[in-house]
Each structure stands twice: as structure tokens, then as C-alpha cells.
Image (cartoon, rainbow, N blue to C red):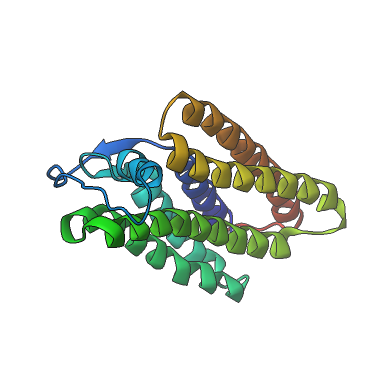
Amino acid sequence: MKKALILLAIGIIFLAIDIQVPIGEDYPPMEMVDELGDEIQGKIINNLIGIRPYIDIFSDTLGYAFLLIASLFLLKYNFNIIFAMICIPISIYLKITMIKLPYSLVLRELYLKMAGYHFLTAAFEILIEFIIIKGVISVLQCTQTKWSVNELMVGWILAMISKGVLTGIHFFFGRGIFYSIYSLVMVGATMFYLNRLYLVSKFKLEGNNDKE
């Protein structure tokens, strides 16, 4: 189980890191439609779509890859983790679809789908972490680790709230200074709850002489 927890920690850290890398050709020029309002369309075009596709090389690729491998190891301890394994490819599909949408859709349909997928992918990311962390806690929790588990959950909740807030900041303000500063809050909360996870797993696994 130690290997699975290490892979899990790496995957979660990668999900918290935001490094955008440009790929592909520039998107076609974007036009406005009357039904949605210029302000909302402007935010979608400027903050979500941009002038060309970008991929988060850590979150969109490595993060999910490590989480999927960790889930495979953890599945024998808690079968409910299979739901996270189902959600991971769905989330990846949505992220890839978002990158391709401006090449195939235009106007109202494009803007509504981009906004919807933006918030949906964030919801899937939070759900995936919740399922996995809940599954791990169910295996590791005992009387002696209860306080550390409570701290872990506080840190996780703060990290997920920060992730949700960042999703909104990205939509309304883009990836500017405000986004970068708040990203540090999410990374800090993530590192805190991973530290609590380490303490809980260290006590439980060493106590059980787990040699995995």
C-alpha cells in the first residue's frame, strides 16, 4: 500500500500544479452573438478559449496518470475507488474535448459548452479526489489516528474550496495575478493534507508491519 500512497501523493501534487503549455494551431477568430451578452462571451473567449489551445502538462496528463495507477493498487483495499477510476477517463475526455471545441463549433453552442465543460471538469477533479481520499481513510483510520484524519479532512476541504474558487477566478478574471496568488493557497492546503495523510499512513502501516 505504501507504493500506492506515494503514487497518490504525486498525482495529487501534480493536479495542484498549473503549468500551461501551448499546443496546436491558433483558433479561428471568435465572433459575438446577441443572445448571451457581450460581457459573458468576452470572458469565455478571453479567459477560457484564448487564441490557441493550451494543455496543463502536469494536471491534465501526469496527475491523472498517477492517480489512475494509484487507484489500481488501492482497489483491493476499497472497491469503491473503482468509481474514481471511471471518472478519471471521463475528466480527461472533457479536457481534450475543450481543447478541440473551438475548431469544430462556433458562436452560442461553442460558448455554452466551453463554460459548462470548464466547471464540469473542476467538479470531476474534486469528485475523483474525494472518492480516493475517502477510500484511503476508510482503510487507514483507527482510534489513534482520528485527530490526524480530522486535520486531513480540514486540509482537503480547504484545498477543494480553493480549487472551486480558482475555477471561478479563471472564468471571470483569467489566469492573472489574482489567480496565481490564490493558487498558492490551494497548493499550501494540498501539502498540508498530504502531510496529514503521511502521518496517518505511517502510524497505521508501521503498526501493522505492512511491507508493501
